[in-house]
Amino acid sequence: MRIPVVAAPPTEAFRRRAPDRNHYLPAGEVDGMELGVIGLGRMGRIVVDRCLDAGHDVVAFDIDADAREDAADAGATAADSISDLAAELGDEKRVWLMVPAGDPVDAALDELADELDADDVVVDGGNSHFEDSTRRADEHEFAYLDCGTSGGPAGAELGFSLMVGGPEWAYEELAPVFDAVATGPDGHDRMGPAGSGHYVKMVHNGVEYALMQAYGEGFELLHEGRYDLDLEAVANTWNNGAVIRSWLLELCEEAFREEGNDLGDVADHVAGGSTGTWTVQESLEQEVPLPIIYQALAERFDSRASGDGEGRFARRLANRLRYGFGRHEVARKDE
Image (cartoon, rainbow, N blue to C red; front, side):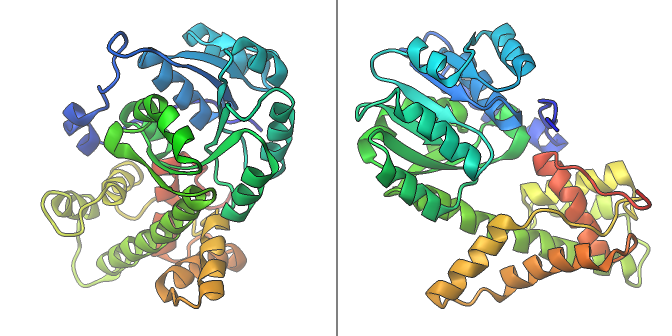
């Protein structure tokens, strides 16, 4: 089922940092590029909108006709197919792919292969496994950039963090687009050869799991401990100067404000886990111990196995945090 394209509203702390928004590429200050975007879900549509806002021309395609129409209303040129999208682009074609990882990526790349040559560039902005990315780079003549993308729907306003792997010339060629989609020039970098962008994003997600677990356990102790505490007030205080301040902590504050001090009917059920699993598998391959990340992943799996809607406060908070940064559905008790 397609999820409507709705950008996550920024937290109040983000609003206070409004001067830090990406104003690097207002229309008219740079030579606009032409970019094809395939996949107009939540994240793909943000790529389209930020590129348009920066003065770039966008040709957009999605299998959903309504998504194509919405992108056209925003100022993009809608294409009826991948081949039509390629035909609309100039001699040097630059394409951003934002489709689900796995077979959909390979299917789109195979279609593009008939339309592109060695001077063209394709960015894969989804959560592909890094080994799939190295394979794809070897299989295709065009330059393939694997782009780990972090920031969630809040990136509609603030921009993403982009971790890019692949040929340096292709990365440099797409720099104006990366500047527009990211928080600015400091919001993206080339990590290394093909596969490295998605590799770094994989580890990023493993760290994210561990941080969510740590915040959850801390607030669980505060909730169950010896004082009757206002957890929103605790999170707000920590976010103003404390060592552990962060966006995830801002989202904890938001969760307590919107769900209540006891998180209301938020269930002990934490979805997701593929990138964390990949991180743990890679740690075993490299013989690098990651006990904290592994435990956070195990907590996710246990939350789904137990079937206990009440469950652990820490995991209920993690469930709600996934909505905060990614607008993932919140599992509720008695659903």
